[in-house]
Length: 239
Ligand SMILES: *[C@@H]1O[C@H](CO)[C@@H](O)[C@H](O)[C@H]1NC(C)=O
Ligand SMILES: *[C@@H]1O[C@H](CO)[C@@H](O)[C@H](O)[C@H]1NC(C)=O
Ligand SMILES: *[C@@H]1O[C@H](CO)[C@@H](O)[C@H](O)[C@H]1NC(C)=O
Image 1 (cartoon, protein in one colour):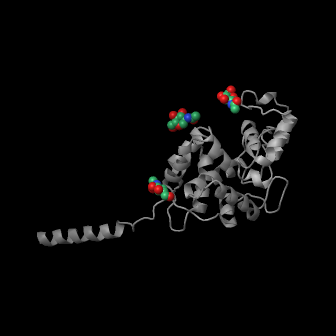
Image 2 (image 1 turned 30 degrees about the vertical axis):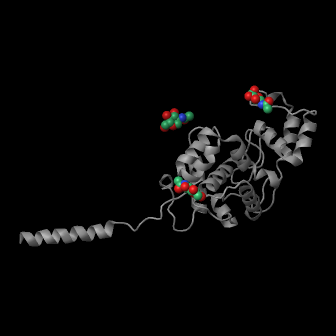
Image 3 (image 1 turned 90 degrees about the vertical axis):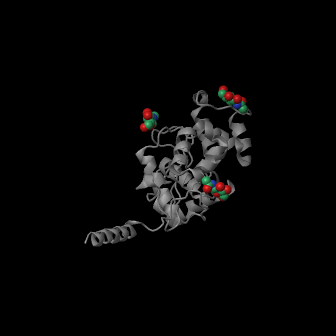
């Protein structure tokens, strides 16, 4: 009798462990190389994007071309890298609808990454087709624009320099340019390999936006979910 109970318990234990053991999970791997982003994926990550061209916005089918070109030009191929930059741009530009800062309306701030004017200045200056015009606006001299001296530059000049990097070729590439030129090289690898931890380091240590807010986390999660291969789990932070 006792033996029977024992073997019954054993059978139950074996059965229940068979039932409750999940199939091997296809775990979240931000280091996965993913193909070009599709318009459908962009819509999933940035649902408020415009459906017709406006002064500041291109619909998903056009926007996605600019984003893919920028990622390719900067060698950004991994899920973690693309999701981080897509999530950042979606948050900063309100799902790609804005191209310049409207709240509170800082004159020199813009692009889909909403770069501040010191970065806008360096970005525009670094683009061969814009360098001469930046110099002309700056009275022939490269200005080392920083957060402490930016207010000495006339608003009209800030707007004129920002305007140089608002066309599609530049606005969608601003986040990629910033990652390459303003972040430590390790950040790029951490975005590919570190999952949410990598994103946190990028936001805190390179964007200087402090802790990842719930709003930022939601945008990152939407981007990851839109871009991850089918069957791959979303990161635990997004549950
Ligand atoms: C990430 O992928 C690269 C190859 O693309 C590989 O060399 C590297 O070891 C991977 N890193 C991790 C943490 O898996
Ligand atoms: C720009 O100014 C910063 C801060 O004053 C300084 O650290 C940096 O070396 C300067 N860069 C150039 C190119 O002059
Ligand atoms: C960020 O989060 C840490 C840990 O939760 C907290 O100690 C710190 O005060 C936060 N920093 C900011 C700027 O909110």
